[in-house]
Length: 524
Image (tube, rainbow, N blue to C red; front, side):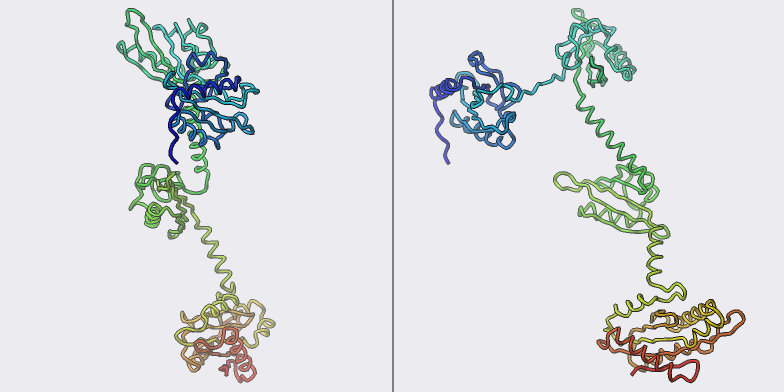
């Protein structure tokens, strides 16, 4: 849409006159061509309309949601000479008023901003922001006694300028800063005329609270017309408060990292260490300023490279006798670029030991060291019986085991069980798994068994390992008596439950038909 032609000066003057006449209680402000409020020309200041005070521009008059509307109106005023829009004042956001902007630069050098629709309200509806000065100038003699002070000292320190005349400037300084103030003053006196010295000191406000100033003392003591020292005092309380907040946060983080039971490192994008606590130094041998490299564990160096390159989290565990868990997190700027990383290191040796102990307990029978029932069946189910060859299941049951317990005691029975388990594991070797699945029952699982003949041979080898292998308990010699059932399944054949059931049935048949201490039956 094309801009409207700019209204001529006479037309703009007419709009202003009509608006002021229609709204005698309107609020008025002068706007410089930059868009910022400026002093009202005398011609407008004496009209009796209420001046807008406080905000730097019309944007400060309205709620954030309406600031875009004001910007659009300003552009229209620049192009067309006049503009108006409906806005919500920040001091009364539930109300809607009209903002007028009229170009009078042809005569007064400013635009005029009018706020109408608030005539019946008090000026308090216009947000007033008191601007507190930040700079005050003081004049001192060679003994640092104040000769004069600017009016800004009132809002800054709570004193009238006349109250400070004749006061030693040191009397205004916080006692903890006296030493620094005196050292800076003596240094200034040793400099040639025209030199300056800068110092940061806390001064005490009339009500007792401290105000931070950055003071630049200019040495003019050799000036014959007006000897003395001119002190420019800049209020830096906000800056010092921000620095103190940062320092407090850094101290809090540092103290936290000292108490946490883990090592903490922070590195930059160049892999240089910017923070490290004692525990982390113990883990990786790095100190502040070091570059992570060959001197650190290779696992950490590789993980750091990955985090800095991708920005993704990395978690790993490394080490030998001592196991260390490392969690690496990227640090990024507002644009998402990686600026470094945080590395958390924890000694998890005991956790690993406990984890391994729990895994061992969940997998192995505590008496015999064989796989327990659940672990044995899990091994069988995990193989899905579809390997390169078939799977053999050998079910072994100790004959007369109850009588051994009854006659010789449970310790003797346990000794017999551990002896049998040891002989079975020795016979099977690494090619199979021996599991204790009941009180006196063992199940042996062997993979890559080509057929029933090889499966039967496995059963025979197990019996041979037990034949003639007595165990002595309290002077009594016990010979293992075992019934063995063997079942075999080709690839894609019977499922695990069926295979075990067939081996179990074969074992019971061997038990019924045995004629000696050892018996074996191959499932049909």
